[in-house]
Image (cartoon, rainbow, N blue to C red; front, side, top):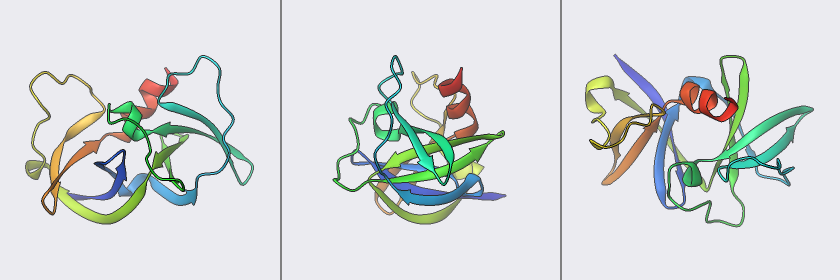
Length: 138
């Protein structure tokens, strides 16, 4: 059985996130920085009265940071938590069957990484948003 993933780009890398968890995509606006937060947590964004913790996917997975002047924030709901993902661009929705996702590199023990897939001739890192939220709010 295949699952639809939203393909996004951040820091020159492609990421796939579960499309079923995505609620909306909004322009990135001024965020309130959280003192003591890890570098991947960019801050809080007010989305129609709801404070959303925004994670820079590129920084979180070691790809630098968002590269464009007008990034977007993908709003996703996971286990009653709303998180935002700072991305440079949103590409497409693509379905992957579990067997199509290759295991991440041998040394990778990050439970937030589901596996690797392909989008055209580029490699996509599939991200488990539930685990990413658990790690961020732990």
